[in-house]
Image (cartoon, rainbow, N blue to C red):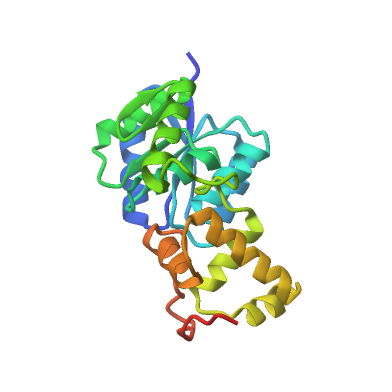
Amino acid sequence: MDKLNVIIVDDHPLFRQGVVDTISLESDFEIVGEASDGDDALALVRELRPHVVVLDVNLPGQNGLLVTRAIKTGGLPTRVVLVTAYNDAEQIIHAVRSGASAFCPKHIRPEELVEVVRHVANGKYVINGTVLGERELQSWVERHVVDTVGPYRDAAEPLHPLSNREMEVLSYVTQGMSNKEIAILLEISYQTVKNHVTSILRKLNVDDRTQAAVYALRRGWFRLYEPDEDIPGLLSQE
């Protein structure tokens, strides 16, 4: 029988090596690549087309959600197991709607991760240790959306994945950049940035940009700054 090809992506070498060692012990798995940031991860998946990628959410470059969406929208056959230290229902909903097949906390036991990868490779979905079919997964998402934002959500459907541009704008919001600064950096109009911010607030079901920044940072979507960068200023409305 052909082996299941797996790529491991995490920017922490010790954690990544632990996952590699765990997967490598299985006779039916083969590690075909490793990466430490989102851009390299996506390039590897496009090149190698593994059965499964075990992918951290909090990555340099593109975060795990963006990589997951690119894999899905690109029509690639690879299925995604997202791993994160930030585990809550809203995070899982974003992960599933981005195209992930499983969502696991980083404290998962090695033998459990192996089973998750195996289930995902066989076309199943795994949420918090529960193995689901596609219809069961959709039911789980709908139920938890109602639990999270209430039954009277509007047609815009909160907790819907942000577009790539919205995620980019949000990353600069978390760094404390103003709408004017973001517009100059992205070479788009000030009004376009405002429109993106409005859409972000609606999709995340938050009231203002500060709440949006906290939402994203608490879920490990972005990092405030790299060690060699200046610390950004306070969040601004304009």
